[in-house]
Image (cartoon, rainbow, N blue to C red):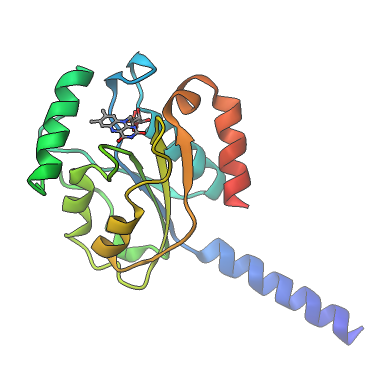
Length: 186
Ligand SMILES: Cc1cc2nc3c(=O)[nH]c(=O)nc-3n(C[C@H](O)[C@H](O)[C@H](O)COP(=O)(O)O)c2cc1C
């Protein structure tokens, strides 16, 4: 009997502690023309970010560059290449949440030239996330889970095993993408 009472108590404690955790889903994503999907109204990474927020009850936070990237794919590729080479820190718009106030942070981005888009570096350099838990997720068209090494370096966080989803799957095969998200979250 005592054993059962103890088990129930620990279960209760576990559930309340999990419910108290503050979760943030921060991401960058770009609408417009992109590889393999044509011109889209909602970015691939944003679709995945929304799925994660829905499942975890996390708060969504979108990182927005002060100057949007070109809608044309070829133009965007060229700008992003230059920014990566220059290790640029493009200005971003003020955000509504301070990531330092969250316990667990999901970080999503499209892989750009094998790395995280530079506005994400601008964002992370504004905050101290050392020792926090970050779960990275990316959308890509072949590179897989890229950019995580620099994400670790930029944040000093404990970065867990990430999720990589093809952009065209997130955009056009949402049930498949949702299943991948749910499997990863477990
Ligand atoms: C500037 C730029 C660079 C890209 N570089 C890569 C890359 O190196 N590897 C890759 O697999 N996909 C690359 N892609 C494809 C994107 O990662 C993919 O389309 C992603 O799903 C876009 O997400 P978004 O709609 O959230 O912006 C690139 C796309 C752009 C626009």
